[in-house]
Length: 238
Image (cartoon, rainbow, N blue to C red; front, side):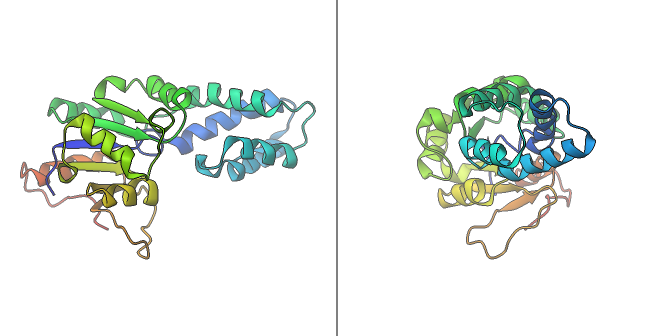
C-alpha cells in the first residue's frame, strides 16, 4: 500500500462537523428563538438535526422544513436564513481530534497534501480559514469552484494533476462511503475510511483499503506502508 501523497475530505474528516453543528444550533436558537425554554430548545435542536441530514440536504430544503415545523414569531426569508448559515457555520467549526499534530507530522515528512470538499467556496473556504490549515495543503479543491463534485472522477483527476501524482501513489481519507471511498477507489486511488464509531456496510460494492477511528491512526499506517516501523498497529482493517 505505497503512498506518496494524501488527499483529505474536509467535513467529518479534518473538521468535526457533528460538534460544529451543535455550536451552530445554539447560535440558531439564540438568534431566532431567544425566549425558548430548555424543553423548547431541545425540540428545535432535534428538528434542525433531522432537517440538516448531516449537511447533505439542500439548504433551501432545510429552510422549508424548519419553517414548516417550527413556530416562528418572525421567520427570516430563505435568502436571509441561508446567508445566516453561511456566515455562522464556519465560525462554529471545530477541528477533528489530533488534526494539527497529524498534519504537522506529514508536513515534516514532506508528504504533499490536498483537500477535496463538496460545497460552496464561501462556506468551505471559511471553514479552512477558521481552522487555520490552508498552508498545510498544496492545493484545495472546492466543488462549487471546480464545477464538479465528489464522487465524480474528474474532481479527483484535478487533484492528481495538481499534485503531479498517479492514482496508485495517493491515499484519500474521508468519511462518506460513496463520495469519499467509492469515488476514490473507482479512480484507482487507495481509500482510507474515517469510520470513527461507524461500522462498514459490507453490501457496498467498493470497500476502503483501511479504516481509521481517528486521524492519529493514519500515522502508523503510513509508517508501516513505508517500512518505517515493525509495529502491529496498522489501523482498524475493514
